[in-house]
Length: 199
Image 1 (cartoon, rainbow, N blue to C red):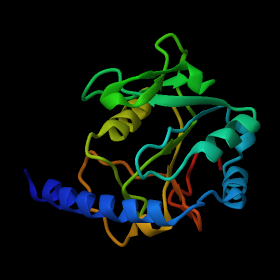
Image 2 (cartoon, one colour):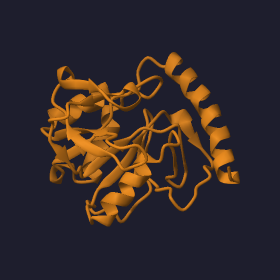
Image 3 (cartoon, rainbow, N blue to C red):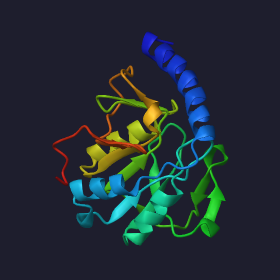
C-alpha cells in the first residue's frame, strides 16, 4: 500500500467517526434556499436527468433532495454497481416499491428500469476540501464513472452533498481522483468549476 492510500485510509476512519457523531446530533440538514441558489447557478431548467443517491448509515439524508428533484419535474436515477471494479450505471427511479437489494445489500432500482446518463450527479462523501477534492469510500466507483462519462464525451455536473463539518483543509489525491464541481452542505454552497458546461 502506498503513502497516499495509507493516508486516505487513516482519514476515512477518522471521518467516518466524525460523520457518525454529526448524524446523531443533527436532526435537520436540508437547506432549500441553497439548493434553489445552486439550481439557478447551473441553469437547472436546462437539465432533464439527475442522479442522486439513497442515503445509508450516517450519510446526510437525501429524502428531501430526492423529493425536490421530483417536484422540479426532473427524471431521477440512482447509481447501480453492475460489475465490481467497473464504473457505475444509472437506472431510473420512480418509487421505493421498485427497489431490489444490490451490491453490498444497498437498495437499487429494479433490473428492468431504464439506464440513463445523468447531466447532474449528486454524490456522497466522507470528506471534501477547499479545492473540490472528495474523499469517498475507497471503491473508486464514482471516479471510474466520471472517467467513463468523459471518455464518451457526456457532459455532466458533479456535486457532493455533505455536512459542513465534513470539510477539511486538505485531502490527498492521486491521478485517478476527480474533483467535484460543487459541494452543498446544510450551511454553504461551494463552487470549484467556473467552466461548467451549464454556466
